[in-house]
Length: 271
Image 1 (cartoon, rainbow, N blue to C red):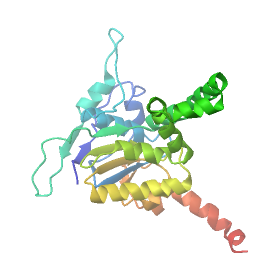
Image 2 (cartoon, rainbow, N blue to C red):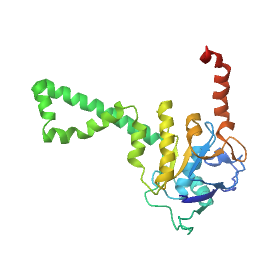
Image 3 (cartoon, rainbow, N blue to C red):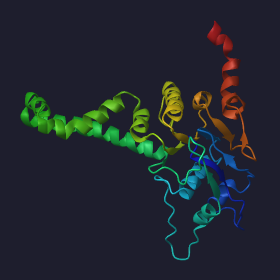
């Protein structure tokens, strides 16, 4: 399902191009972004992929957008001014009728949010162990275990146990996204592969493909992970090019680097 069909960054400039977000994208000459069910904004650090996601999130007023509060007296809201001059077009429903708005509860999920949730899960696991240890010291190990098996104990520690289980599985990011993402929504994902092993990056990309196909979800994703890029059924914009060209995943610099690296060492795998 295509909820956001196009997005055009403004071509407006200011005298001082060192001001955000002009300092990130002033030297580029992008045309209109035309989105698919899954669209990837690829680029190395500093390419502006997270900035563009944030601009889109603000323009669409999505939950999770980063705050932009120029609260100092006399400060000009350059970011807000930039966003106001951007343009977008909504998509069509399955019957070909123009949709009137972005679905409610669509959101922007940043890598920082995922890391924050992971830290909370880690802290919950440590806290649970600490409380259990204190109970064991105060009441004896047997009594501590008995307390945890009571209704009061189960209620008190159910969240801790669930969090610890998710963390111990090594798939925290996958679980967080599964818990968060709902059908028939638009999601902007900023480097969702953060903290994931290579195997789980592949699993995540496969899961995103399935959700886009079967659950009516549209994704716009910022990533430079070769493994995500190789699995996602996505349209890829290369933000490292001057005009934000659409390219195949195997044409991208980061992917080519991996290819050349292993190609030079092919004999070591064949021996």
